[in-house]
Length: 141
Image (tube, rainbow, N blue to C red; front, top):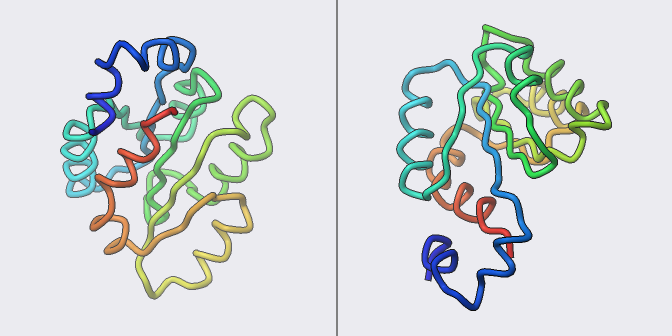
């Protein structure tokens, strides 16, 4: 039974009525990953909003139930500074941040973890597990 099935089950109605839907934001500009994330989100049944800059992302966050996907190689913004801002702001520090990068960028991975990223994955692992990541984080039970 997947998340959609549970949402349609009358026995689970009270649980879902009390739980706001997860907001998924992505600081991703690479068109290949925009496409991959969009397809996986559609398959998982959870909408995703792509934010091309830090300002848009910070203003798009609407609640505590938020997953933010960050491409650490996004040149349109400073991903590490974005993560640090999210985690140091009381309004957004509860947001879950999943970041991805090239498997050879060890120093950048350490910087993202130090800034507060909840999970930092190599691009290949992120791609392979994207659908499962979205499914797990979109279920509020």
